[in-house]
Length: 185
Image 1 (tube, rainbow, N blue to C red):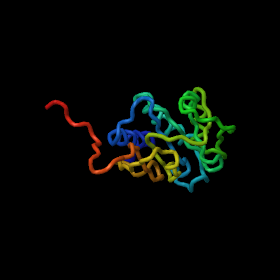
Image 2: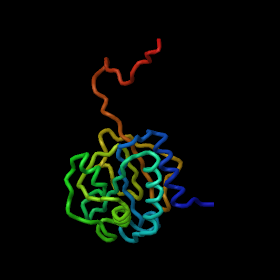
Image 3: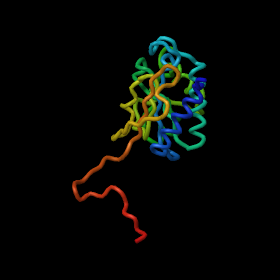
Image 4: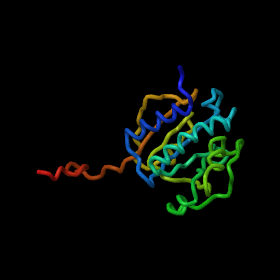
């Protein structure tokens, strides 16, 4: 028996959370081709129904963790991001003048825009983690250093899935310490 899109996205989010727990206030960037999920070429068969199924899983994850969601638009809007105005203000990211629609922005970004309380588009962010469904190229919106991670799901529907979390840059040399020593000695 094959899993539903909702079940698949739940597994992906559980596996990402196991690899690097996201905390309240952190940002998860999502790129999703509903065309690819549905089995057609990216940009050729967007689906609001698939977007709704994906969004439910992401919304549940947001409610559980307190993360901010950022949905990447397609190349017709220069891969801008749909975020809540609260996050744009917190990050001091200027709003850009566009509203994603099914054919210019993509079905997923357009759906998210309609679900958010106070949505805006921004050109860029530096997210703490990301999920790329259908090879939408979200890397430009991740902090340095991105760490790829694998989960039990390698696809959502027919779309390839890639996940990454970020970590601080390791600086210093041979004397650098990267983890706090145990102080219970």
